[in-house]
Image 1 (spheres, one colour):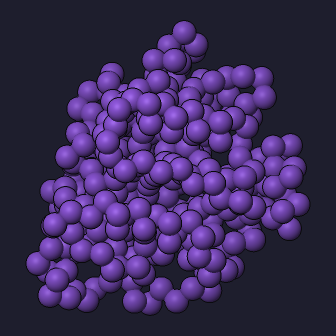
Image 2 (cartoon, rainbow, N blue to C red; image 1 turned 90 degrees about the horizontal axis):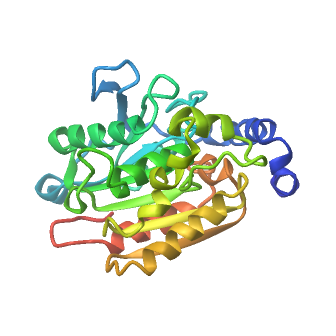
Image 3 (cartoon, rainbow, N blue to C red; image 1 turned 45 degrees about the vertical axis):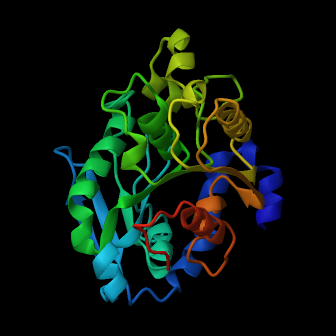
Length: 303
């Protein structure tokens, strides 16, 4: 079914997104999450959407208590104008549950949407969430020096802007983040005729298209030297795979020295690349864990 949908993905991405969600939801709901504690809707800002959920295993080893666990922070997609950290009680909760099962402290973040909160509000919310986590994640067993940001689609754009866009006030420093995971991210603003989410891009990045180049993360890929992994699906929303490769190539020629990887997910589409987490399928997750492991410093633990 997914192979068939993949071949016609861009003919109706909303219909096919919903089909993929319906397909993976029962698989995700069948997972045994009884060993994971969840603290939901914890505010990291004043707006009603500036809340996050924390997922963790309650038991702490002696090593956990001494050093803390790696922290995985997930930012969902939604074309800048829609989306929730839990779309149906299963997706995108599944991402955080999977990482918590691997021994991480996982965080699922809600953020403000356009048109109420246009550029650079999404990046500002990423920054605000990171500042809250650096101050508070230790009480959940997390290591504030080992925070990894994972952004999907529009969430990936916000993560990238928070790290790479020099125009964003208070841009995250390399020392504040252990690594970034950009998954099917929108790394260039465009309103091309074949962009099915052009309205969302315009709502977030503004009506003035002459500003899109300077507001696109891909234009600033050399600004941050944070470790980074970029993942794309075989069946992407139009142009996103190309923009991700452009961002990766720009980063490589910028002189950065940090770990930089590119992952191509065969047979996956723009939604299944995250919907498959905690469903019994082990594809992208292990590669992300390996990336986290390979960024290890002397103050980290890896389960």
